[in-house]
Image (tube, rainbow, N blue to C red; front, side, top):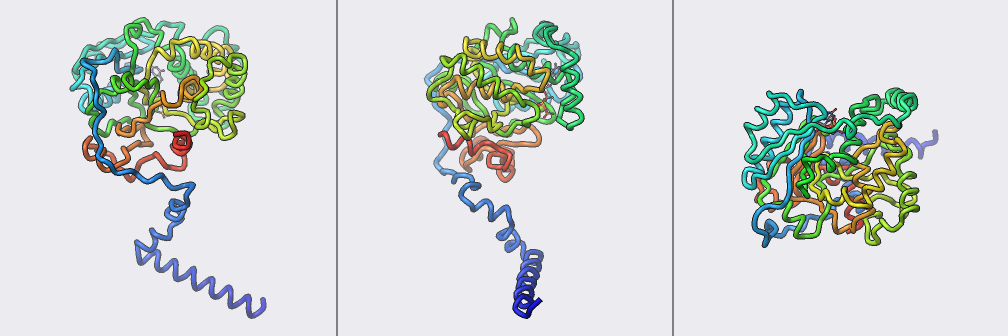
Amino acid sequence: MNTTTRYVLLVIFIIIGLHSILSFTHEDYGRATSISNIAGKIPWSAPPPVVEKPWVPPVSNHTGRANATLLMLARNSDTEGALRSVRELEDRFNHKYQYPWVFLNEEPFSDDFKTRISNVVSGQIIFEQIPRDHWYQPDSIDEEKAKAGREKMVQDNIIYGGVVSYRNMCRFNSGFFYRHPVLQQFRWYWRVDFRPDVHFHCDVNYDPFVYMEENDKTYSFTITMYEYHATIPTLWDTVKKFTSENPQYVESNNAMGYMSDDGGNSYNLCHFWSNFEIADMNFWRGEAYSKYFDYLDATGGFYYERWGDAPVHSIAAALFLRKDQIHFFNDIGYEHNPYTHCPRGDDVWAQNKCACDKGRNFDYDGYSCMRQWDRIQ
Ligand SMILES: Nc1nc2c(ncn2[C@@H]2O[C@H](COP(=O)(O)OP(=O)(O)OP(=O)(O)O)[C@@H](O)[C@H]2O)c(=O)[nH]1
Ligand SMILES: [Mg+2]
């Protein structure tokens, strides 16, 4: 090593040493020079600045409620979790509006479940069993092939990779819930989940169903993120085949730019997290989605792979709707553990008495797809 190299190395060691000492002894210096802080200042990774204008709940000319229901899928063993979620949404929203609740289950609900849930809701309550052929794996599925697919996913450590009931649930939420006889009387639903831990962090001081109806919205979300590719390896190719055979269903002003980085050739795995949904069931019941679902279902991908209702719904909403028919509810604070959408903007956060920590907002987390959503606005 020559003398110049030695001096250069010495200077580098001194700089690193000083940086380490300052980082430990001066918290502000450590924070200012952290990789995450520096990365946050690079334009591609920084969230857009929040525009601080006074937030006012949407105004409506509508009198009365929308034709809507709150909807939960649950098992008898889920009483405690379901109760917590129902109670929170009642406190934050529904005690003011008294929308009915519909609870669905592939088995009859127990008296205990019914009694305890009924005790905390403000409006009408309906408990219904799901028809067998809407829930269980159909006979058309080759069970040997499905089993091999599950075993491979277990080996690859894919979450719920080996679980048939999870697949039943995803297929039911993709293509059957809105066909249930008891839901025929309703147009709008708000899907309410509770597992592993769900929270509604803010007051909802206006009627989001009426807002959707008055503003020509069809589908809405609070959290968007990437899907695991291993659960849907052939989904996008199937969608592309469907749209090339049925181009009439694809909206011209759609949200393809959110889901694909190359004009639709490949899927970037972005989807709306469907454990929260406020949406119009007429969209799922319509011709485009019905044909699309039947086409996907005929491939067996819900069982041979592990297609989730989130990418299945999201892809349909992004392709068959105008992008302005999809609404992001910034003002609804929502958590499905481990991710939280906490309303952006101090004003909306304060007015709606949000309990969430704005510092933990998922919107511009590295795993979030909010940037892809923003780029098409
Ligand atoms: N009746 C019934 N409900 C189910 C079944 N599996 C899931 N659910 C419900 O369907 C919803 C989604 O299921 P989760 O297990 O939370 O699925 P997930 O959100 O993808 O997975 P997590 O991230 O673990 O929460 C929840 O409201 C569950 O209670 C089932 O076999 N029967
Ligand atoms: Mg869940």
